[in-house]
Amino acid sequence: MPETEIKKQASQHILLCLVAICVVRGITMVITRYQLLDASLLHDKACSIAAIFSVFESVILTTLWKWVATKHLNFLATFHTASSGFRMFLVLVTLGVIYAVVGRDEIVPWVIAFMVNYFVLLVLHSIFFAKMVNKLFK
Image 1 (cartoon, rainbow, N blue to C red):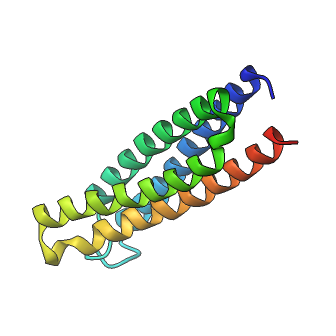
Image 2 (cartoon, rainbow, N blue to C red; image 1 turned 135 degrees about the vertical axis):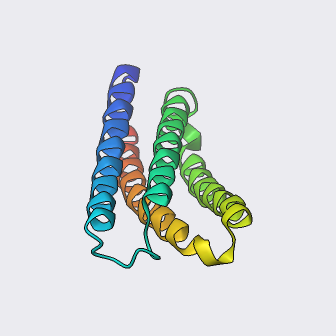
């Protein structure tokens, strides 16, 4: 696959992730605005921070994927495994810092907000990586 196609696919994936994050944030905003869920389970600050974290994580991982796919094609499987582990580690470290700041009683909304974004991006990244590996190694 030519380098321009790899860059195009990476840009489309970043756009898809941004749209997915915006949709998740919109849904959580509606839930918190109209109090469809108990306020102790979800609040705006947690959802906003989780969305910002997800945007940065998504852009960074896709940019790194693009670099690996263009320069070191043989390491794509290792990269996918490493990026999945790194993503989980980064979320856990971030939640650990938030726990240290907000305390035990306030951590639940943060965990819920980060879990929702984490799983949405996990599905999107996995589908993208699988689709691209099939295209690259055809």
